[in-house]
Image (cartoon, rainbow, N blue to C red; front, side, top):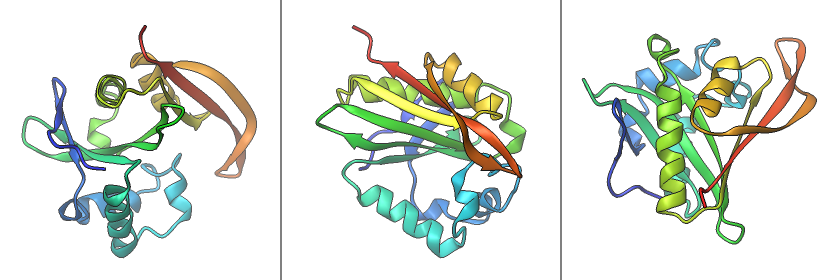
Length: 178
């Protein structure tokens, strides 16, 4: 699934991720243990070929929207956000993101991107619910989702093994405004 026009926030443009984005910057994030600390991609193939295949597969999928997070000022690609798979019958989808540029952490960019894509999911795609999850120790991600209007729906204890320790899975969700 592709976005026809980028989504604009005060500081970001969210646009369809392309093969041209799979370069040293993006691949560097995937090889940075701090960036991928709470991402399942750390267990997979992070080569250029595998990453390119991931982007092409997402763009070809009718139920996934993979977007690059680009700073409006300067045009720097700083991360990715994904909506999908989208369940058209139940009108819901999962949302996940990776803010790869460490210099951008703690500035509210993730919450800005989450809110924009969630609004698009409700207003343009007609979804009823957007869900997400994060590791229990990923306080930055949890705060970003809460700031964007999500609430904590549940916790699954000792769900993820991360750096030798068990962590809870925090399930978050937001419903379309009625």
